[in-house]
Every structure is written in structure tokens, then in C-alpha cells.
Length: 221
Image (cartoon, rainbow, N blue to C red; front, side, top):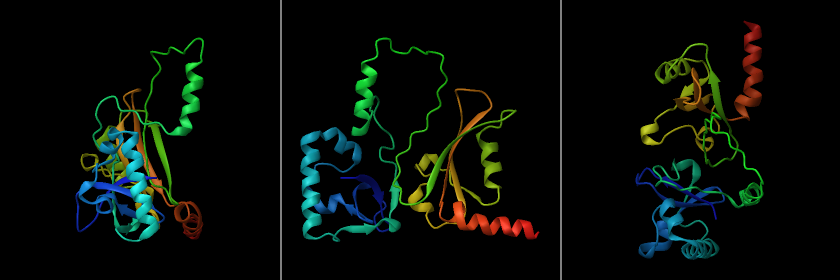
């Protein structure tokens, strides 16, 4: 079962959804008033017994009425899964379990206290568009605000950077667009004169056919 946080035009409050084929099912409507959870964080904290209960109820609903309480993914607003997580919450997929076990077997764990690290963590629903986490170093310090100005004025690139509202480019929203979108712009604290930002583009348009047309137009000029 794949879960996400979403809202709709008629109900802007973020709520828990279950991704079903090309739609988003409203978990609150499916489970009714006895829903044990209203958010992804609450679901995680509820534990395995509730996970099984919720997944079973949703699967039963899909088997009986697969399209009831389901919105098309293009018609919903996607929200950050855990916008303001509690401290010390770490989520690992099952495919990472073997890596964790192998790391635990190391006779001499690596100790690199001075290793500079600049992480970008993203969990996005992906259908077609590609995403890139960019780390760029400049000769002189640029700063976040100046970087926003430069990127916003670049042809073929649109700025979508609203961290206060947890809004930034996501593949499901960029799909079918000619331009690339950039957001999550911030200074890299691990090294001077560096920036981190997130870029999303539809590779079937900007990454393929549209590129050929734009190159041809440049050659004609």
C-alpha cells in the first residue's frame, strides 16, 4: 500500500490518501469516523497492528468499489509526507534492511568526523518526469536570494520555491510542461560558496522532442 498526504480544491486541509492506479483514495472517507489515523505520521506512530488494519480496510474497499472516494492524481495537491517530523524519526524501506545488516557487521566502522555532508531527502510520486538534486559551487558567495533571482530569470526555467508552505517542484505536477522547475534553493552549509537546489522536468518533452526543436531554432537564428 502506497500512502501520501494530499488535499483538494473543495477541501484544502491536508489528509491521508492511498495511491490507487492513477488516482488518490481518501482514507478518511473510506474508513469513516472510526479511522484510527488522519496523517501519515500518525499512521507510522500507530504501529504494525494498525498498519495491517488500515491496509486491509482499504484493499476491501477497492475490491468492492474501486473508484469511490478516489480523485485523479492530476486534480489533487500533494503535500509533504511528514512536513514537520518529530525528532529522531528515521524511515527506511525494506530494501535498505540488507544494507543496514551489512554495515553492522563491519569490524572497524568508519569514523569521519570532518567529512562534509550536504543531504537532500526527497520522497516523490513519479510517473514520467525526472528530478535532479543539484549541488553547485560558485567562485564567490551567491546567497539564496540572489540565486533565486538568477534562476527565475533563466529562459525555460520556472521558480517554484515556497518552503514555508512546503511547496516545491514535484514530477506529478511538472508532467506535460515544456519548462523545467526549480525549488528548494538553499545555501550548502558544508562548504563555502555552494548552493543546493532541486530541478524537475518532463523528460519526454524538455528531455527529448522539445530539445530538438529549440536547438533547431537556435541554428536558424
